[in-house]
Each structure stands twice: as structure tokens, then as C-alpha cells.
Image 1: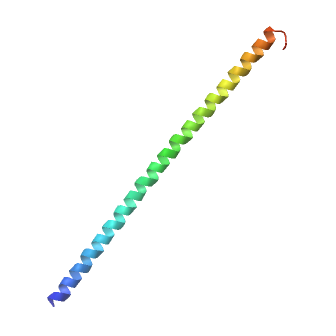
Image 2: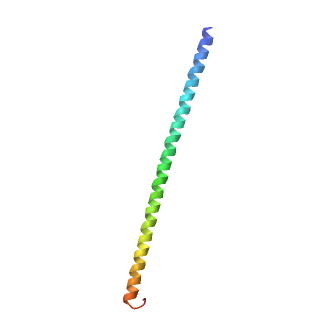
Image 3: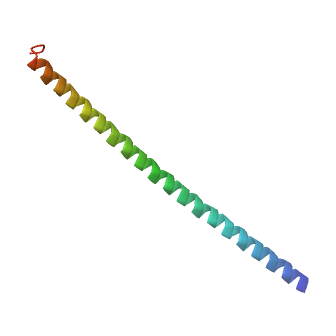
Length: 76
């Protein structure tokens, strides 16, 4: 009879341990997912900012060359 009680207790402890491992795994996955999402948002922002800078620089260069061409009489 005592053996049956110990067997039941062992199964309960093993079940609780497995649940704890599963919960810890799920929590870890959430952290990984959030970190990945945050990193992706940061990279998207860097890409957007870089593209905006490239566009502004290209426009400024175009305007500068246009002004230079007008001064030389090459453009109207």
C-alpha cells in the first residue's frame, strides 16, 4: 500500500516537473519571439532611414548639378 502511494507521488512530481519545463520553454520562446520582432523593427527603421538619406542626397546632388549646368549655360 505504501508502495502505491510512493508511486503516485513520484508520478505527480514527474508530471509537475514536466509542466514546469514546458512552461519555461514557452516563456523562453516568447522572449525569443519578442526579441526577434524588436530586432526586425530596428532593422526596418535603419533601412528606412538609410533610404531617406540616399534619396535626400540624390536630390541635393541633382539640384547642385542642375544649378551648375545653368551657371555654365548648359541648361535652361
